[in-house]
Amino acid sequence: MDEDVKKLKQRLPLLDYLRQQHWTARPAGHGSEFVGLCPLHPETRPSFYVNASKNLFYCHGCGQGGDLLRFVQLSRHLSFRQSLAYLQQQSAPPADPAAVLEQAAIFYQQQLDRYPEALHYLKQRGLHDPASIQDLRIGYAPGASLRRHLTAKGYSLDLLRRLGLLNPQGCDTFYRRVVFPCCQGGRIVNFYGRSIGAAFAHRFLPGSRGGLYAWEQVRQCPEVILVEGLFDYAVLWQAGFRHLTCSLGTYLNTSQFRQLCDRRRTVYLTFDVDANGSGQQASQRLAYRLQAHGIATRRVLLPEGHDPNSFFVQGGDARQFQSLLEVAQP
Ligand SMILES: [Zn+2]
Image (cartoon, rainbow, N blue to C red; front, side, top):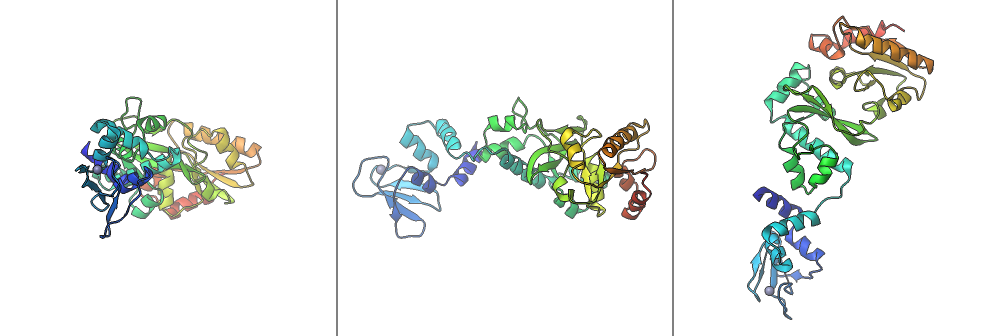
């Protein structure tokens, strides 16, 4: 509660609030002091002072003084709680989903360095380069903290629930997950959260995931490497490969498929080579579909039991991966 009040007062300074209420004032000598007619009692000579740097008011006429919340209580005849709710509504930022997701991404990024278990997990998955982690805006959702952060910024629980950042019970949806933002047209549309604990491994927010991951960056490339998972993407990015995209699973949806076919290009299909062959079957099926649309395909054959992520984790390097690309089968 104290923290909420503190953040609210930072977000909506007393002087700004008074001016929104059409209070007019003139500087009262010192830089941060202002004086005007008291909104709380009738008067003809100004005796209501606001100290903008202290964020406090005092009226020499009626003797009332205090902070923004006190002012709202007095002027609107509300309780403390009602005043807080009123001001939170007054100062709520516009409910633009992309702006909220952007705030969530910044928050997740800030958490990453505070949780050694998250950095340890990234290291285990072969990600150790801080610049690459920064490039991809990888973050960490510890759970039970995003809600507080975003509501203190003025976003309503209802909006956060609608975006899926909070579950229907009002708790953080992502709990102990490494988080990747998924963008479309330069705006975040979803998050992928990889559990580092016992929970189900892969999770997205409800709603669209956008098309192919980071497609805007590669759509002009005549050759594109397609991987199925974001950790595959991340290790290849770290190894210096840039003509990369990710389908977030082996099945491409209609818009992803359309993106791959929007010009002549060669697609290097780099799906998992798992023991039951399902990754390779998916890869084969996709190759036929793409070829039917005039797209050249190459199937990159990783060693048995590997995906690009495990290939790099177990010591593979950029040069070795490059040779796999060169011998990839049409
Ligand atoms: Zn007064």
